Image (cartoon, rainbow, N blue to C red; front, side, top):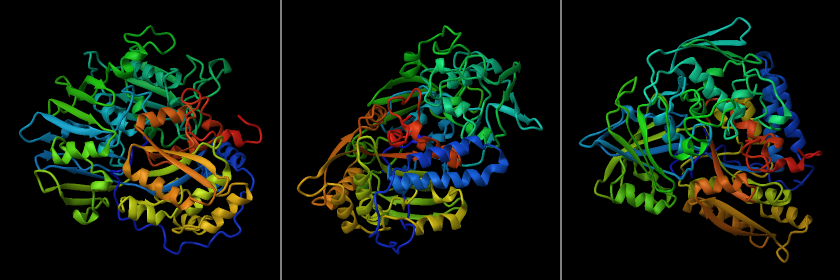
Length: 594
């Protein structure tokens, strides 16, 4: 889905990626900037979209990973496994590796209650085209539905609002046949005109954070379109009325794409593509709109889902109510309420000690692996029970799900010199961080792309591990001090580095672990916390040096994670409208800055 929450609900065995630690990098040097290497690699990916160029794209993805590693613009910490807990009076399906934010709660029930009570991290929008995080998408997905979906995050693609798909012999025309029984919350029937408008909104609205998902050949739908610099320099440069969208009749829509694109239906699972009525919002050229873009951002919703919008108060609560006229299976509960927290202590008290939440996470500072009794199912999920140490009940249900995700510390390259970034990586002991601080709730990460979808397979990933230059699962103090001193940073004249983490005790502890190890080597590190949505806003404004975030894959695609590393796409002067990369400002290290 994009940026993940604070990661405190991720669990796993934490066995890591090898215990040999690698060679101490005594000869490691700062070397030249790698941004140009990453930019060239991404351009090879986008310029070679055909199926027979997959090997070339895979090699290019690895080159991008190498550039990220060698410039150390992002330090991966762990690949997550999502854990969740629920009381015995709750019946809910087990979720899958693509994340519980995919789950629609019309099939969840609470014995003796008409309300499903949940918790959530902070978020700032309920507009599908603005959402870039799992916290908002969890709420959005109750009100809006996509044409295709992964049921409860299980990676088995299914049709939802479409009945049939036909692909032309040249694979450039996809004909979608829509269901004829779907209605919006305002009572109107969904037609191809509505779907066309909603995809146009993704591609053309100035409010869209995911225009590239509609337009890009690699990692997107690859819609045919004309471009104009008058329409912007980034993803929103498509000319209105030029998109490859053709309404055949009320229930038939043709997508004309620029290159063969086998995962097109996977891309359409993304919540940004959820239909709303034609002309509903005033931010698409040619439409006056029934509501304003500001209203649909936080105050209005008109989707096809099993729940209706009721209220949203940022940093406090979101509420949806049952859609009794839903075209599908009507929900068992009359409403779903999310209490929104940025403080883990308050969330734990609410969920466990006061027993207010039906399904919940346990922040790491209150968690112990020893309390789990579980067996692995045929999908590799740990299913069982968890013993609580607080609260009225002592035992709750437990699910641990391997997840395609990476949680990390990243750097704004324009504000943090490369020797500083490398020194942080040199002292980071991943095994220590994961096992001691994150309580084993993840698997040590030495790449951004998870090993399960590594572009050159298992052997390629092992080669990657063997070539990790900073030393695996050890702290290389001598190498860090040498690189710092060679570049003028000493204990007497240290570099001042501010680390901004989620409002999370464990990420603060992780940052504190690195601070303590760097003390006296030439870096003076200060720690601060921010609510998740505030951290995102500051990142978009380029107002971060080093920060914690996470990325959760919405479908099994290497490109879905890599597109945000293109240096020209990391320009925070253009994010979120004309760029949608990670908050790295890596373009400043290109030979010719973007």
